[in-house]
Length: 236
Image (cartoon, rainbow, N blue to C red; front, top):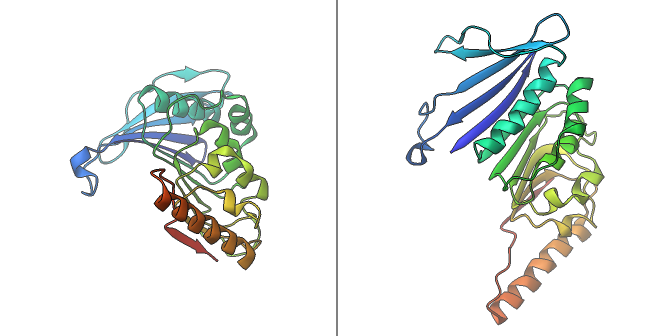
């Protein structure tokens, strides 16, 4: 299993790649991360360094980007590597987002690769999850976390987020953030597992979801057609 992780630090952004053998997915410390760090050079560009060893020491500097910020260069490398190496799981962890990173995400070509198995977003920036959706092929599990856990009841994931094909086609959707999903939208989600805080969803919306699943089960029993059934629904 190939896993990619982008982690933003002060004046630097890490792109981490690690391989987990198929027979060791549940065994801790069985993977060796390959970490590239994109660091500001103080002249409007950035350099790429590699962290190596248990103590995380830098090796010699690598590629230099003269006219590109560390966040812009790193996010482009992140998606390019994920496509070239056929990553199964992607993780983007960015507490905040600078203008260059936002511009790069808007200009980056949209997803054309086979679907990942899962895509995890961990951020405090409300604008980031919608910007990442065009780069995700429909069909992968979605996890959106605003770590540290949100204390207020402000909507973190807007209503329009749930109108996209990527979210509707996700086989599972998991978030502890407050969402703007509505009674009309939630029956359109195809996920078998749903975990979310949804203050705009009433008992009417929940009943519609349950009714749809009962109807699908009835049709499935009457024919050989298979349907995707909701197995877990947790809404608070």
